[in-house]
Image 1 (tube, rainbow, N blue to C red):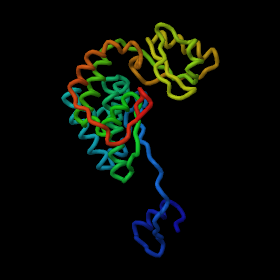
Image 2: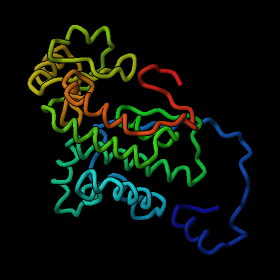
Image 3: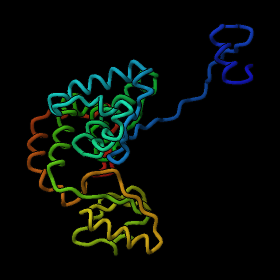
Image 4: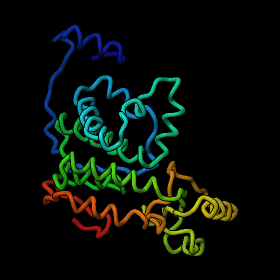
Length: 263
């Protein structure tokens, strides 16, 4: 029995058998689902502690960064883990989709590799937007090399399109309909009462002003473009060509599709 964390650390280091009780928890494990987020969640220094302390995580990040280097023409690691003086610049770079997409994939993939090295195995996986690529890769649908090539191409093609904005809104699909317009699209249905709108910056700013005037608390996402809207149509042909050059395999781990909602 230990009195605090420092006492526990000292006891474990001393390997004092009279103070340590060992037992095995016989409870049945619960099913585990790996869920991978999309853009808007990224920030400079994400996972830095793990990169510095966990070899499995670091090796996965390094492997992704090396595979990505010829596609990106730069090393992703100084942007993920910048020096203190460069952190503001790195944060701004991570707002750009050409950087954000490979950065998120890399961290999500490395986290999954770390969890699996600890014996945490998913019974199913799901991803949101760029997170679907991570889930597909881990499920065996895409090789790591093909997944990273597609992620880099997707980011590059989207970056070349006109910029835009996205707005998280705490309303249902029905309730948010009155705020839509030819330039403001319903991009995401995250939950029964949570949506994301997408469109040009000025249009999103105007609809945010209206929503807040009506008493709805909204949040702009950290994105450079209006994803999941008609503003992405200009990238479709080239991205289809990139996908056509990859080999897809049946998933080895159950994978939930955001398109169909089924396995």
